[in-house]
Image (spheres, rainbow, N blue to C red):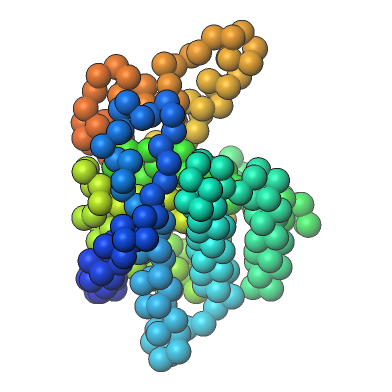
Length: 325
């Protein structure tokens, strides 16, 4: 737990000096034209805030590895690789948005190519660590080796989880707070997966990232001084995905990240209904904007979703305990 407080403190200090610099550089994201009326007071808020928790956590773990305070494992390297690579993808996306002064960053195809490259490397590292390419659902007794197709599975999980957090990052503190809850849950789960090489280090990473996110939340809560941007949201989501894969809790991730799932499903259903029947199922998606449209205050929406996240997190932990993690 000490690492949580260390990363929190480092992030607070780093943020205190970095946020003014981002404001000076005018690293602001253009607001979606549909949100201008509701969020017009946020137009000058800098983005790319993901660097404020990505860099401190990476520096901490590099120092710990170099000083031999923690053990090296391929699983830990896989985790750090996903954390950094998706942060870089998000950073490029944010940079292009800021540079072009619109919401057009990386194209879908460009992002997909980068994600495929990451998935290929992940699959190689996954197999290098002598992990089996299994679709393994303990509760249902499903355990099937799918060979090289597991690389596609990794791609799907990383892409889905990164986009889910990205879609949720629409209100001050929402994605950040929910990610804190998810990483604390995975910290407990990871620590109890004693069969996994590097399980203690993965748990430490979850605690460190949770601490760093708590520090970031100080500046990201309403009214936000900075947004995490795609730099942060893509990295957070993909990292949750790879932790779920390494600990064999891919299905439980859907419960731990229940709000992320609800937000994503609202967008998918909206698109399906509109394309099929020319009907909007919700006033606006992701669904947190529907609550805004209905007149609910931003802080109240965030609090409601936090409560859902805490509840789903507790249920997930209880389920993991009953099933011996």
